[in-house]
Image (tube, rainbow, N blue to C red; front, side):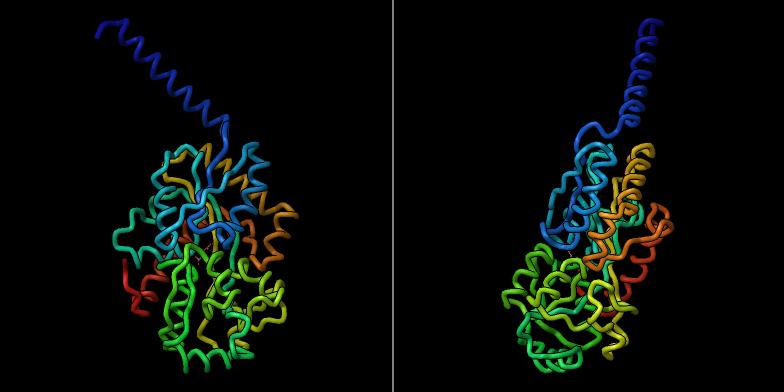
Length: 327
Ligand code: MLT
């Protein structure tokens, strides 16, 4: 190679490196897509829009939610993990897509423990046992008696195999030893619509989706599956108080980027999420729906990485024991 050619190549390489550094330093310069792997209006979508709103203001660019649904949320997360790792595609994953999916999808195109750069936890979301408003039971005991006697005639709604509503529903069914007909939706947003109109009988769902409809009397709630009651639904007993001591389960929603996203960019996303979760208005919006805001220690990338690893380890044996068939 002659000297001129070599000089030109070096200059080009330096130029590219400078452009990369420039692009990272000036990130973001255009809107960011946040993939929500479930239908609009459901819990993942709601949390994404609440935190995305404030993050957009911090970043100076709009975070645009794109609902990419299917296969219990794994279709959307696959889209996100395969996107260019440039900070312009991130995703709101959750306990199902990042914790339960590996046990249920042998051909899953991502490893939740390895293929994402965790940004941070957005909200914890307790699980509530809910039923259509004319379900003939006054309390959890009555509900359990009813579903045990009639399970084969009852429809249980969920958001697809491996979703939060599915895994927590399967867990409840295995504890109660019942086999209702499982009806899959593209998210629990649409599932809730059918629960309100009485087309399905019951489901287990994240509090942020159901709290307003419980308060409004449009559906019945029997118990919240956390050790303590929720300030958003103070009259609702815990499963333990209501006598179902073995059913305690919570979900979470968290932001992820493709693994190779540069550190300068992920640091800005981490900071924007942190600021959103410190903002009074954003906090109120989450808390009013019963969501739990992670404290400083529990919201960063390191603790999210540990959480994903522990959730995969926790859910795999549970789902296998419950006999859930993989896809
Ligand atoms: C789930 O069950 O995984 C969620 O409710 C999904 C959703 O956001 O609809």
